[in-house]
Amino acid sequence: MNVTIIHAEMTQDPDKGYKGSVQFEVEGHKQPYEIILQLTSLRGTTWDYSLHFAKESGSEEQINEVEKAIEEDDDLFDDLIDAAAATLPENEEA
Image 1: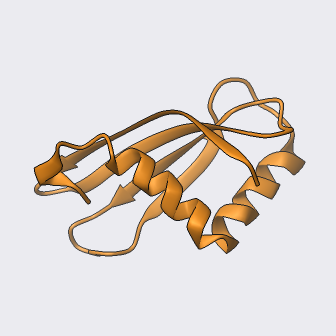
Image 2 (image 1 turned 180 degrees about the vertical axis):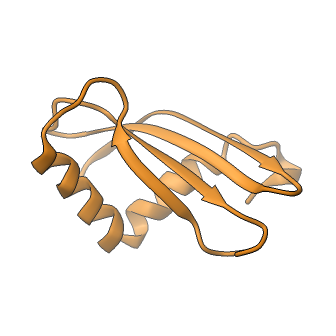
Image 3 (image 1 turned 120 degrees about the vertical axis):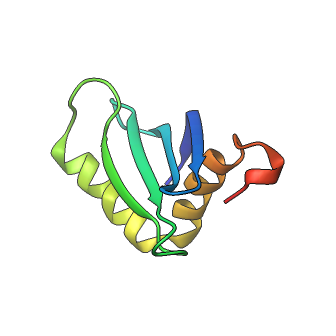
């Protein structure tokens, strides 16, 4: 799956952990997506996420395809996390 990052950001809160978002396009899909990421200090190493369309609603089939790719392709998921983490100041990286 060919993904192009449009925008990424992440913040860190000492009590609430890390929270980020990444907007991205998938080759062949009409609408861009946004994934919201959260790493809580209580869980430590497990990222929670939610995926939705970044702008207008699109094909349910296509978003399900992206969801499946995120679940099955660790490299894709790591790339999305890395894009968000790259926006943190150096001393705060996730």
